Amino acid sequence: MSFFEAFRHPMSATKTLYQKLRLYLFNTSWMMGERMLHIGVGFAIAIVLARYLGPEQFGILSYAISVTAIFASAGHMGLAGLVVREVVREPEEIPKILGTTFMLKLTGMAIGFVLVLGYALAFEEFGSNTFWMLLIVASAIFFQTFDVIEYWFQSQVQAKYPAIAKSCAILLAAALKVGLILSGAGLLAFAFAHTAQFIVAALILAYLYNSTTRLSVISWQANLAKAKELLGQGWIIYLGSIFAVIYMKIDQIMLKWMVGVQEVGVYAVAAQLSEAWYFLPVAVVASFFPKLIKLRDSDNELFNRRLQQLFDFLFLVAVAVAIVVTLIAGPLISMLFGAEYQGAAPVLTIHIWGGVFIFMRALFSRWILIENALMFSLITQGMGALFNIGLNFLLIPRYGAEGAAMATVISYAIASYGALLVHRKTRPVFFMMTRSIFSPFRYAYSAVGATR
Image (cartoon, rainbow, N blue to C red; front, side, top):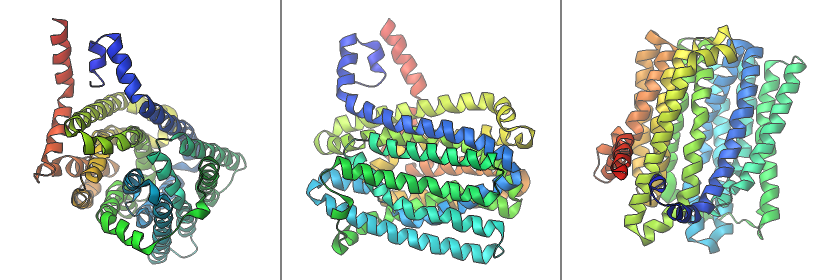
């Protein structure tokens, strides 16, 4: 039974569907609750902060965060979904899996920080505000190694604990930023506040893990053989994740180089509003991921049916969000950010449509892990990065921030949809996504047929 069939069947069928999915819906609700809090609080703070700093200084802060995100990808190692899969399949290896993952991420984050330092020395004036912004913001990446604990909670379908940790960190960081604004603090102070959020989240995650499991962080074991095994399976996803971050963040860096930091500030406002919705597919797919792993091993027909249902759901939600945001972008930007940021409205009406492909990409990324088709992560993300960089060079000089938004949407479409048609292995997913694109007509036709 699909998510939508429940509307056309008796109440007993709806109840049965709910009972089957209750654990996953409850888990998803925690993830969505945390992200909604992040959106609500983060959005409110972004409005006040953008108005307080102005487009130029807000652009510097956004630029520092984008540069850090690209180099921090060296520490993510592409292990998130892979670790969840390994924990589900090999519970007896949990201390070794988590300990090794932590070691790998910490090593990668250290490399990422050194790369940020090298970038700052090469492209920014030593001792300038931008130079120190880059280093302070980059220091936060060391605490992202504690994301390993979140992988554990995801594998146990216990999203409430990471949600609690992140929510507390968001609220404390928001209070700190408000205090800094009220005290008239300078730009660098907000870089420290940004880093503080990651520190608090890491500490709370570690505490919750130790207090809710029989294993403590101290019991983790870093193992060289396990590291080779994880990297052997995940290196393709790792490189793919680097390409993904590049084509999601390079636009702001190229805008800074080709136009200026003020244009980055305007673009960042639009991108923040657009990307704020990306938590939805991540929350939904993360909750269903353990179940999909088991279905693939036990019932392939049902596995494919659930995939189609999830693709349909993600597409419909993405389109609904894009339509609403497109209609209200102008008055929304004007009301929230003021005349200084009015140029962000047309950028937002373009950028928001990239979410259609990002929503479905979230499920495709997990399909890659389940089917052990890791090479396609590298190929598709690599295509997205190359097209985005090339299109930015073509479109930014002519259209500025709007050109960057166009490049982003086109590259998302190529990487997350168009590229899947090329190979026979991914072609079935391409056709699933295509069916989802026509899902409004499919469900409307089914609904009309059910009333006859």
